[in-house]
Each structure stands twice: as structure tokens, then as C-alpha cells.
Amino acid sequence: MARLIDHTLLKPDATAAQVRQLCTEAVEYQFASVCVNSTWLPLCKSILDGSGVKCCVVAGFPMGAMLESAKAQETALAVAAGAAEIDTVINVGRLKDRDYAMVYADLVGVARAAHAGGALAKVILETSLLTQEEKIAGCLICKRAGIDYVKTATGFQGGGATVEDVALMRQVVGPEMGVKAAGGIRTAADARSMIAAGATRIGASAGISIVQGFLGAAGTTAAGNPAPDKGAY
Image (cartoon, rainbow, N blue to C red; front, side, top):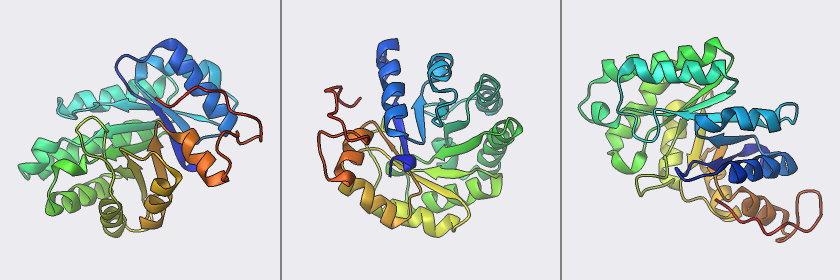
């Protein structure tokens, strides 16, 4: 289960000490990645290189409403600095306007910048702001643009992942793309329901609690040792 989790800390007031702790936890539990703001990428790399845990950073986050070229440039800078995965945000307003050509061009730029450096590109749809038609359109554009994962939410707009949205996203993108469920996933039961609906990655700040719930041994680490009282971010 741990290998499906992006251990996440995206709060604007996150400190270096908290990021170090995030990385230490990620190594101990062998999460898929740590997901952080790009200012923390050098610190994360210094801790995680050789650990098997990837560095995932956000670009155009959390709004996605930036100049088309800026999102791709931010992606390219992060990948050049060592990011293995990029989580960016679809331009929600332009999607709602049905300016599909702009949304597509925006995401093609991100996909190309990520793939040029061997990184994965994930796109957040912010599903709580979208109609059913818009969710479907967003997924189809991501697929056509060469994006690797579609993702539910930033966690900054009040809405999070739902089983219904994850199932819809999986249905639209098919088996060849990843689906990342993020936003409000706190327990093993939450994660289990998202995976059953089609999620192949979980974004959460509560990764330790989720894994412990799967292990059925709250208060025990993946290695079987008592867990320090660090809390989730």
C-alpha cells in the first residue's frame, strides 16, 4: 500500500524541519514519493537520493490559471533540478469556457517538458469545481495531451476526492493512464475505497495512518517498531 502513496506537504507555511521529517517518514515507510512545493526540491533530493522514494513537486499550483508557457517552464525547471514527477493543475476557467485548444496546448507543454527529463506528469482537475461534462472533457484532453495521470483535487479549494469522481475518471481515461485520488483521504478505509474505484495513486498527508490501518496495527511502523508521535501534515 505504501508504494501507492505520495506523502504530501504543500502548506505554504511548511518549514525545513517539517520537510525533513516528511522525507524521513517516506524513507521509513517506502512511500512512492514525497510531494512538495519546488522550493524544497534540493532538500528532498539530498535526503531521498538512493532511497527508492521519488521527489514529486507541484507546478502552476494551486490555481493553474497562469500563462500557457509559464506552466511548462516551471515544469522544465523542476525536472532539470531533479524532480521525478510533476503535479500541475488544469486551467479550470478555460476548461469551463470550452477553450479546449488552449487547455490542450497548456498540458502538451507540461507533458513534453516532463517527459524530456524522464519525469511523469499528473494533472489535477479540481473535480469539485467541475460539472460531469467538464470532468469528462478534462480527462479526455489530458489523455490526448500525453499526460500520465489525472488527479482529483489540490486540497486547497474545499473539495476532495470522491469514489464517484475516481470511478468516472478511470472509465474515461481507460486502463493505460494513472488516476490519483487526493483531497481528504485520511484513513485506510478511504484509501481502499479509492483504489477499488480505480485509483492507482493516493495523495495524502496522512500516509502513515493509512498504512498503519492497512497493517491493522496502529502505533506500529512498517518495520514493526513503535511509531514516533510525529503527526500528519
